[in-house]
Image (cartoon, rainbow, N blue to C red; front, top):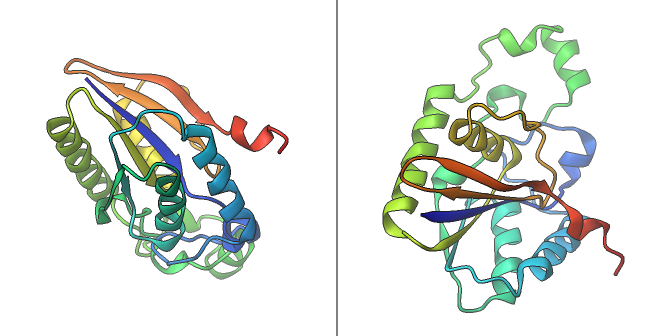
Length: 194
C-alpha cells in the first residue's frame, strides 16, 4: 500500500484570466503564494515521506513552500508531473479560442498532448512511486488537468468533477488490487479564517 497526496499548485494571473497555461511556465501570483502557505500549514503536522513536483514554476514554488514547513522531506522534481501540453492554445482565453478557431476548437489539431502520452507518463510515474515507496506517504504537487486525468485513470468508475481547485488536496491509497480515494479536491484550508 502507498498513499499519494496530490496537491494542485496555487493560483496564477493566467488562472484568473481564464488563459490556458499548459506547459507555459507561469508563476504564482501573490494570492497563489498565500494559498500555497495555507495548504502547507494544513499538512505541516501530517507525516509524509517525500514530495515530488512538476518542474513548472507554479507547482515547484508551491512544493517549495510546502517543503519549507517540513524540512525533513526530500523534494524531487519530475518532468512527468508537468501539466498537459496545450499546443497553440496556450496563453489564450476561451473567447479568443472561439474567435480564432470557432466553437468546435477542441476537435481541431492544435498541438494538444495526446491522451495516450498523458496516460503513459502518468502510469510510469505512479508505478515507480508504488515500487519505490511501499507503505509510505508521498506528496505530489502538480496541475489540475494532470491530477484530474490521473485520478480518473486510477478510479475509472468515479463521478468526481474534473475541475481541481488551486491547492486542493486529493488523497488516494494504492494497494495491489485497487485504488481508494480518501479525500477529493478538498480546499477547506482556504475557507478557514486566518
